Image 1 (cartoon, rainbow, N blue to C red):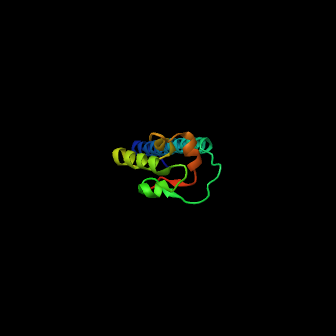
Image 2 (cartoon, helix red, strand yellow):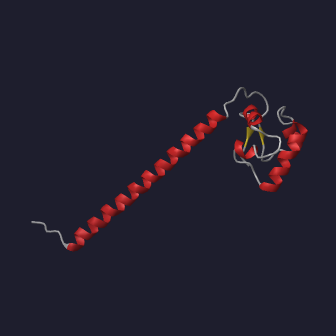
Image 3 (cartoon, rainbow, N blue to C red):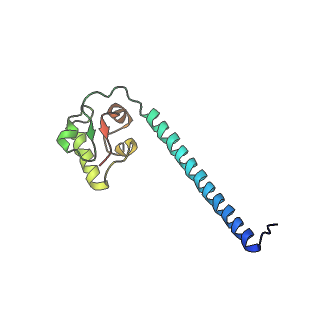
Amino acid sequence: MVTETKDDKSRADDARAARMRILGGAAVLGAALLLAKVHTASIDRHYAPESAPGLIVNVNTADEATLGLLAEIGPERARSIVAYRNQYGPFRSFPDLEKVDGIGRQTTKALLGRIRFDG
């Protein structure tokens, strides 16, 4: 006959508690990832592309001349983008880019698929 000692019971309880903490953490992480995916999907629908042919430009590394090649940007907006980026740092998303004077939702919608935010 096997008898369970107090130490064995305590270790078993500790192991169960550890498993529950791990499962709880995994559930929280899963929920966070799901919410992030839902949020990203809503942004993607919000900025649905009408077309995305031609040049793809990284707005965080491109100079004024390169940004100006995009028909939706031109030289004046390119200067504004570079000045904003130099003052506030790299852009992470379309809403960040919309903070630049002269860049609005219509412009960012037209740029979807033609610009990148890495770098």
